Image (cartoon, rainbow over all chains, first blue to last red; front, side, top):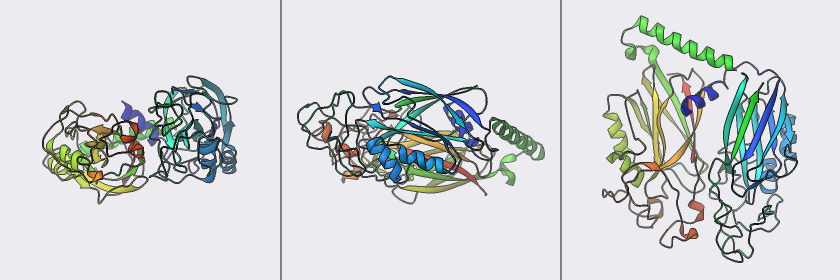
Length: 232
Length: 232
């Protein structure tokens, strides 16, 4: 069943006539235990544009989003190709267990939907969807989203306030579960392309150890977000 | 777009009908020649894939089943990264159309495209490749129906990691090929059924005898697989 659904979803992306303008009702839910999502960028765009691609290098705009939660560059990039965007629908952070509902109006030809938001506390983790075929038939469509690693920053798991691109460390843990005094978990990623995040390691030492994160709080497994698109 | 899905399905159904009318043994009809490019991208951080085995087949071939015992060929693939036994088993199966092994290791962030072809209007694809920094973990696709793909169309799938269940997950340097350890050991010292892989623990998370560190940890999916139908 899953395979058939996936197949249909993909097949519809090719050879389809340009999509008509649509008003889409969208709901995003944070499925994690203790990971906050920074403001989302949600975009409808054409089939040749992307916010990110699995297995490819992150753009500088994607890096700024993944390391510091800054979606301005990505938003400018996708609008430059004719994309329609909704920025920051939750009006700030989307907390664990919380959801946000909003409407996205797409123009003719913008048949693909993508979204990104940084995961906190991580070094360069983000929740993302790349080029979902926007459904056109009336109905409710549910998707489950994975956590990605931008591949641009070492996952040292140290809360340093560092959120600028290229600056090591994690900006903040909005949930205030993090410790201090870690020595650092990892050096540079082995995979410098955008890949599936291996998860936070954490440790059980709030004032030392290798990580400032808590292994019993800050871990997750995919999927980490639910996306529901309703076509009225 | 929904319309194009239905149209595609109808077109394929009509095509099958015509084939049946035109030739009783449609498996030998040149119109049933099918070729596919199978692009495998490694989305893990530090788990190179040993050469991947791709099997194009008709309904009835079963390369592996979750909850069931692994074949000797799959054990060799999952413990040592050697696809030859798995491929030989497939080649001996009447339902198999084509078997192709990848040419080399697929590094994290890297990809390889494998071409498979066969004569059947109802082709299916199975695939397996070892994560070399595990005891007996492998990415797998199990019996995916790709018959609905029209020329030039693509199906995007994500593969999760399975545990062959044939070797205990010691993570010891002596047992993990990617750490210089032994590959195949015919002893079946684990649960002896195929499961979704529980992930690696690593020395950084308290398994002192593990040769793996936090960089080797992974979450699903570990691979992006794009199947594109091409001209025979």
